[in-house]
Image 1 (spheres, rainbow, N blue to C red):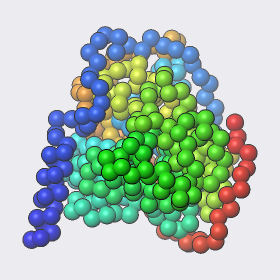
Image 2 (image 1 turned 60 degrees about the horizontal axis):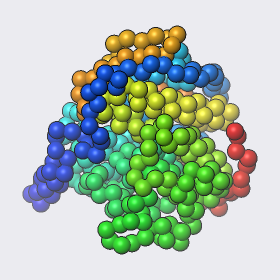
Image 3 (image 1 turned 180 degrees about the vertical axis):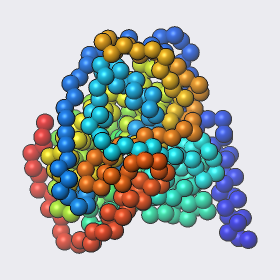
Image 4 (image 1 turned 90 degrees about the horizontal axis):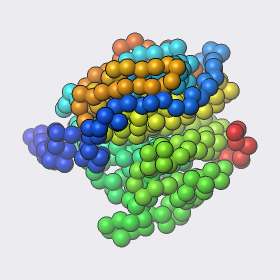
Length: 403
């Protein structure tokens, strides 16, 4: 009876905090202008081809890339806008994942992020806990427990739902100051994104940056500072909350990813890294086709950087997926020659349709066909469980970053 009552209280609290009308109430209003439907085209970028030789039996490193809100239409809009080509076309192992939450058919980033991190469904709005509020171990923590280096990179605040799902354990995604404390206590090696205010301008008056420094973290609050750090632990907090959209923020995701890879690859036991292209979702909430394409192409270029690393390394499993689809986005017209795309939307919120899954490297064949989002971390856990725990000292001597 006590357990049932606890579950009811937690579920009702989440319902109050997260009303059903929208996935979040922090995004801007839906853009109804005609200009928001049409991307007129822009410069194309060349796409390289990468391959995996198939020799590794299990991955030493795992990189999970999440395009928040990214559905097939978002991907194809980006592909059309780049003249018909994306780095995503390098992936030959492709599947589709269902995304529902434990208590809702149409999920949100907290429940879906938790599913992708832990391998278990939870309620809408919950971070790293099950439907009763009990803490669940996630794949980043499991990797850390067996001696691997770990990191998260995001263009949102690091305390936002998706990155938080790989670090924190809280009954509400809105508890960003509590989530920041979880980051301090997590032991994670690298985290880069926005969210500075949740560490340094808190309601409780604490300055968590001091706590991070005492635990050996280097604090970077600008992209230039992030790029200059080459080894050791890093807390890169480059914006007060989420970063600006791509046209304003510049190469945040690319620089953050290169820095994370440069640091994490020094661990002789390997690493786990989650990279989120957060604002594909934000653009789709705003029903803004040009913004979607801007964010989609930014995410794809970073996919290219990751594939370059994985193809050179040959021991790295790369998985690209989404937590859910946003906007009910569709493509009404396009032109490969100019990159023009005309899009439209059915909602300013999330939808319940399946999302694509792409895999490259050792173990990639386990992510094909029709699966559930919980199968993704389930398979990753299988690889981690097959690797013995290592307790020797870490060698983090710097090797030159590849430009």
